[in-house]
Length: 173
Ligand SMILES: *[C@@H]1O[C@H](CO)[C@@H](O)[C@H](O)[C@H]1NC(C)=O
Ligand SMILES: *[C@@H]1O[C@H](CO)[C@@H](O)[C@H](O)[C@H]1NC(C)=O
Ligand SMILES: *[C@@H]1O[C@H](CO)[C@@H](O)[C@H](O)[C@H]1NC(C)=O
Ligand SMILES: *[C@@H]1O[C@H](CO)[C@@H](O)[C@H](O)[C@H]1NC(C)=O
Image (cartoon, rainbow, N blue to C red; front, side, top):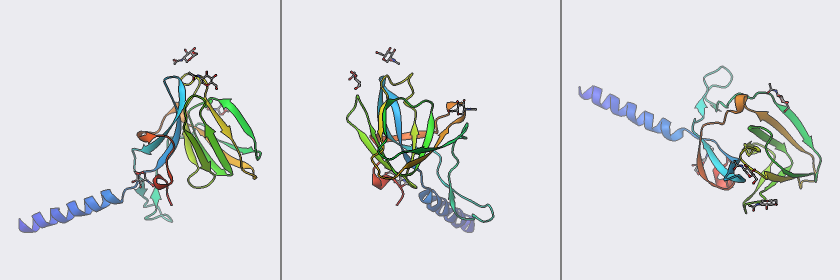
């Protein structure tokens, strides 16, 4: 009995350590609220899991909603993407360059740098935002993006950490 108790105590401790080690990805989202586009910092409900697949054992992985199709987009330096809505609910992973999101009807803005923290979700479609958002590409290099609409417009399960884009402390180092 004593043995069993301490054993379950150890199990509980192990579970707690595992729970603490579980990281949740945060990404900036462009969404519609009261018919205007706003920025939010989202945290995915599903945590990263530790892989057990050969070649990746013990590395972190997060399952994302399936993309319907994807496009590899190359945007010239200093391009100005005038006000527009997200055409569909989609992930956009900014791979290189720099993106400056502005909101015509709100004061927030977001600077996204191409690279591993370049993933955003855009869902300010015309049915939820009248004016959409502005997108400028101030970088001297081309901006490259992987655009991935989700199947059936599925939105990843998330909680809203706060209004506005995610800050550096909410993104991975
Ligand atoms: C794939 O993307 C194109 C361009 O956005 C779109 O017109 C088409 O309907 C998409 N196909 C599917 C299966 O979602
Ligand atoms: C939203 O922004 C657009 C474009 O700048 C402007 O024409 C419109 O009046 C704004 N709407 C509100 C409610 O502020
Ligand atoms: C958004 O605003 C436009 C123009 O005022 C209006 O036609 C549309 O019905 C509004 N949409 C929603 C969801 O409130
Ligand atoms: C997401 O944000 C939370 C709250 O600020 C933070 O504890 C967590 O470490 C962030 N996740 C990543 C992967 O940086």
